[in-house]
Image (cartoon, rainbow, N blue to C red):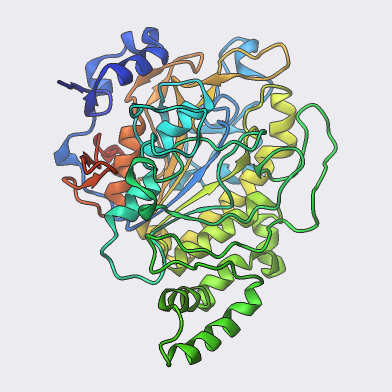
Length: 478
């Protein structure tokens, strides 16, 4: 029988307990119960959100060098970056995030997030499914697999399956998180929920010879030159709606400019009831001006391109914003090729030159557009990776994987900005207050999307599973 784990307000079992022990019992042992208790149910439900945009910094961004700096730590921990003041008195972040510094009044920084693993595959599964445990038969050798828990995107697709809508409720772009061998990270697909409820995977990133995924520019960790594969940033999208959407586009459609012609042709022919209605429906959806504009980001006006940055970080953020505006409820943006944020070598050089500037620019543009459009009021905006970095700098001036603690940012949807939630110790190694786990993270997203607390999903064998496995992070709302 499972027991209650006060760290996330969820049930625990041997697998999750082992995972938590891997995260470092030394840090947990020093915490008081009050600091770890999940928010009470009475305090929950203050979110004003009805949409979520989640920016996933795949590879694990270093919290020490961005949002949880340790200037008083030894040199081998604090590194070479300096903290600077922000528009919120008392809050400091990295000097290499100047646009963030003038927008911290919008963000709640949670400096006490944690997962139970230092491995990319396991930690990705935890963050993207919102749970610490693994299903029976789970293996990182075969991905995707039905022996994975469903992604949060797939759970949302299932939970909203009976809603009448033009677009799928959940989408991920610009491509899945993969490693340099082009192997998928687990936790990104429908898994035990089954392919019927697969989220909409908008796979559009032009392939890079230096690894897969949305790197801002094609850089090598040990060198300064770039090596771009193609002149374009995105390939023509594979316009394919998932089964969980309103019909499935069965054939790949080529250039966006042909969609409207296809739609008109099919409408004429469908009058005679001779063609597949689902294909007519899907093409009609994708021919909508807002949807087609969402994909056509490389041709955005020059001012918009300058604000976001004409690279995979910037244009992925712009595409995510436009899909949200077009009617997708939950958009996940994967930023970083498999190892972009995995700065084992030349951490400070690569962060300063290649990673933080495009992140700073694109996230600030996204926040500004959410604010200027008024969408921020009912949109929960999240930025997080799957883990942080080891306190000590390694021999290659890099940092290694660290699951016990990292920082996540939240804004919008009623979140009280300008606050720091939770803390890590003087070395940035372990949480010292208000630790939150993937179960809290996913519950916060589900609550923002209006999923009832007693909702369940049913697996391939007909067994029900609870959607909420922890308490939402109601402390975000003040």
